[in-house]
Image (cartoon, rainbow, N blue to C red; front, side, top):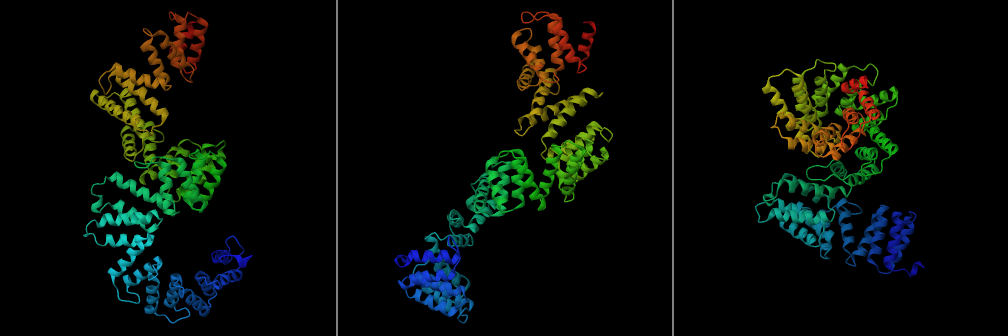
Length: 572
């Protein structure tokens, strides 16, 4: 029965009905429980009755109830009376009277009263301004770990930089407040570590300060600060020099943002589902979230929807739909969309496509600093697609792409240097210079952990070629074997054939295995030709002469227009 409940239980039941938390919203029912608690001489009961009447704007009865609670030396009642007299609710506005209420509440060691009284002294509200007294009361609240008080003490420390250890004290106060989820303190710490101007930071590295900025940004994200959530989610998704890539964490933060209907969260969740990053790949969920983000004007979501359609295109209409998404993003100056519009034209995948239009899209994106645009301009000038073939212009564009952080441009520029040095009638000095640059860029590409796997393997094969013939480097057979063996182990058929030739007279069984493994892969025409020759001439002691098998391998090689294989077939 209700009359058997303790004052604590009565007040809790009253709160449930007053707020509609766990009970139907019913403020009259709440009042009955508060009244029962008050009748048991419970100060909180009287205080809650005051809140009930205050909610009804019945200031007279509210004041009466708060005064009854005050008679029990209940500090929150004094704070409410101070607010009422400050705002002129039921009483004439009176700053001095408000100050007196705060002062009386502080006598009961109430932390909120300390804060209010400190603020009065700090700004001169109802009393003379006295910063020292303000600090004293903030310090009392801070000593009891009141987050806002800790924050204020940190600010006071920052305002007196000449005092001994002021910077360290400020950081210590902010750190304690931040650990209690005080948002302002987290933001102060981010600002301090980002600027790193305090003497306390003199012995700290730039890397350490960056890590601390991220640490407190993530702390801010955990209390659902939108900007911090955005920063942290993409930091984990993309990774950087002080944050290790973690798609699972990124997806969790994206999910939080998406639940708040925030565009970048919907976009992040979309790409997480699209690529299976941190979440199980789900193309339908990817599409739904990207479309929601696009509807809110997120331009990268529009571009990704274009990619989504283009990469799965089965008809001309699919490419046109991709083009529509890219156009929407391009109108908002999204450079990736411009590049993709260029690619649709470059690859003749849309109506009225032409290479000149592709170049125009690439040039527009390049003017906006897009590294990918420089890369594709390098490609079209290297190949002469829709423009006159021009080595120098291609080179300049590849170099601009590299300077903007485009790794693939290093590989393309290296291969262009090698191809041009082979094909053009150049002075020996120029050829050597091009091979030197090719060697440098190939090594840079291989050593970068973000390389493309296929080009990574091809780069090893090309390095083997440079060392074998001493092109841009000293001839080094051991280095040539090292790179070719590495490439062969990773499935490069040209290097497998190279390893066969390197081993065929000494390690017969291993040499044959390289050749046979190469033949298991597509387009390994040279490997089939070499294996055909072994069957034609015999390879003691591994293979006997077998004209039928030799012919089979020559036929496969001839499908790739291998001239020697075609010639052999004519005489068999």
